Image (tube, helix red, strand yellow):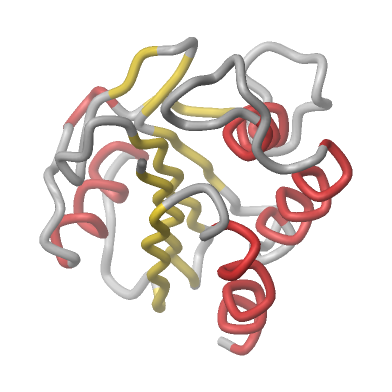
Length: 149
């Protein structure tokens, strides 16, 4: 599991410049069910709120200009200030690099990505005033990246 650990060691200081960061990962293990159930199982083990069918399924392999593109949503989350989206956060270059490294943690053949936020609306899992969470998983790994104000 050195991939996720290397990712967060590199990106935590950058991400914490504009957000509280919760990052957790582990083997997917016996987590089963649809994408919402897998995401809920992971966040429940971390003491966070389950949101059921309110997880937004993103297309992890879609180009950025495609609807519900996982990379596009990650970049949007990383470039806009959480509390005031009209204000910048990370540069486009840094956001794309971070998003690419996050997405590369997973096996593309079995990768699923969901978010608790889409199109400006969100379903809180941590109870913060503003947050944006992503759960990614493949056949062997589950990861939560939660950014909160």
